[in-house]
Image (cartoon, rainbow, N blue to C red; front, side, top):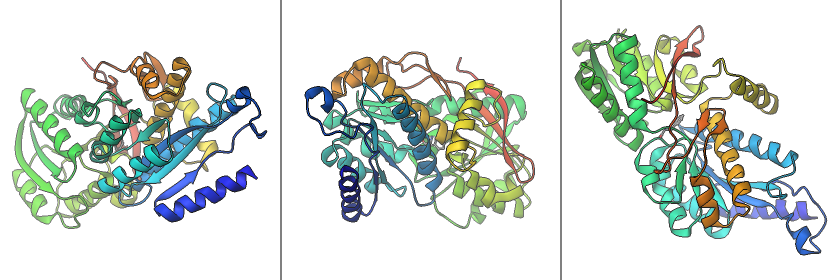
Length: 396
Ligand code: PHE
């Protein structure tokens, strides 16, 4: 009965919103609440907003998988504070307005106790003020632009930030690839790409490199001929492209067609199985900085991959699956330490997260509500190219 009602509610919500995948998990206890003790069996509602469709669809889908795996595991183990966790999730379609709408709905109508998401910094920036004003903690698993957590004291992340990621990329370019010159090609429509491009450039120059050409594009563009011609004539040792995977795949294809052979270098925005599906061997021998690599020789990583594959049809998780899993588990850990789902108490507990053993590394939330962590360098290698762990770069 209750299940039917929930399903009905989910259908109604989906119809209303047209952006909904509302799938509240069935409560572990089925008995109707008869006493205050039994009422403790009410689900703890957690929200997720992510790009489940559109040109960054794998970002939201992988994050959702990671969150679901964490929820299923914790529910199997008796829930959080003895209560089951349920997930309410909306599709942002990679659009800032949809992101704001989704989070408004999660906070105001669904009354979730915390929000997980988004991946893209631009969408986290758009929606975070809603959580901040409502006093509902938000944890982005993966938005790396520094401004995201500056929105306010209820906004957290469990990933590193772009000043570090840009430094790691520049260091790898200078020290491992021995690049003296670089081209930079930036998606102007993404706060992430603009910020990360600046950080790479600043660090590459500080390490004695020269940025010989800078070009821009708008995410979703199909033709990169003009930019690539300008880059080709500058003959850079490396081409830094801190964009998202669909555009990067198209750029790689067109660059190789134009006879550009320099390695491409990018950031975590490359992290999708779709990158190689689009670019095929055009992306082979290129590198990116990331939060995790599936072949990392680390017991925690390998245990996570086994659980994820068993749950999701043998799919190998990307970094977003791992970060979604870590963000959800840090949230559960914080609720447990707060002994409450109250917004203020929960905020304080998330803020005091120390040395949490995540799949993406040990996570400590610092006083800026960011996580200081290592980055890995990944090479696209093999036929078809797949992410291959190269090395780890640690802060300081
Ligand atoms: N860091 C990117 C951003 O802030 C998002 C991202 C993270 C994409 C991890 C892929 C993997 O926009």
